Amino acid sequence: LQPKLLKGKRVLITAGPTFERIDAVRGITNTSSGKMGYAIARAAYEAGAEVVLVSGETALATPIGARRINVQSAQQMLAAVEAEVAASDIFIGVAAVADYYVLNPSEQKIKKDAHILTLELAPNPDILAGVSSRPNPPFCVGFAAESENLLEYAEAKRLRKKLPLLVANLVQNAFGADTNEVVLLDDHGETRLHSAPKIDIARKLMAHIARLYPSVKTD
Ligand code: PMT
Image 1: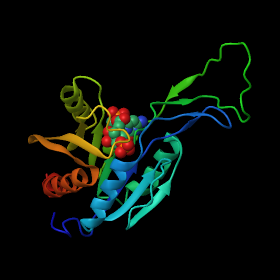
Image 2 (image 1 turned 180 degrees about the vertical axis):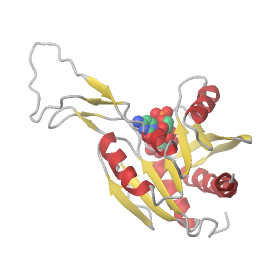
Image 3 (image 1 turned 45 degrees about the vertical axis):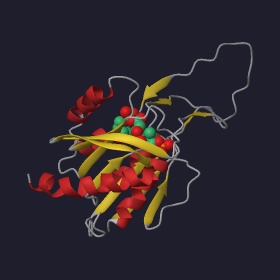
């Protein structure tokens, strides 16, 4: 990647898991480590972009050059994205957002007794779909993790969410891993990025975005 291909562009990235509170000490989350999103933040900065990283809870250090906004729940992630998106040229949704939140989380730790405990779950907003359906959206990039029919579901997701580019994880257990293998889906077809460290995948992804970005913006 030519170092300053994205100079002057502002890239907004979501990364890591969301955490949906059940009570004072428990919650619903997933095993996203943030590694993929943080690698993309680093690669975007290397490409000359101004980088804003909206991150769920991770054990990772903030990538050099990124402005990091810490969030916990999907609602908080949405609020942070909404505050930043209007000034962004490119949005990349890498976070593994919980599909549901707990309707009535308890302020106190729920005590164990002999009864069955039922949690009422309500659907979370789709952050990426919200961004891509804005009147003048940034160039939107989504990720897809599917357990079956990956490319078919991924392309359907790309068209449904009106995304110029979607990254489909070929690796079933990309969550937490140091490497990834992906297929990039766009209007021109499919581009496979073979198994490599997440930073290498991230750099190739940024190069791909830099190639597509001007044509999409002037369409
Ligand atoms: O963090 P790592 O351990 O490095 O792992 C990386 C990863 C596997 C988490 C990452 O590569 C990845 O695939 N992220 C998206 C995982 C996912 O659960 O995707 P999805 O099919 O639920 O969502 C599709 C897209 O919509 C994603 O871009 C997601 O960020 C976005 N989305 C989904 C739901 C929601 N409520 N809001 C969203 O913005």
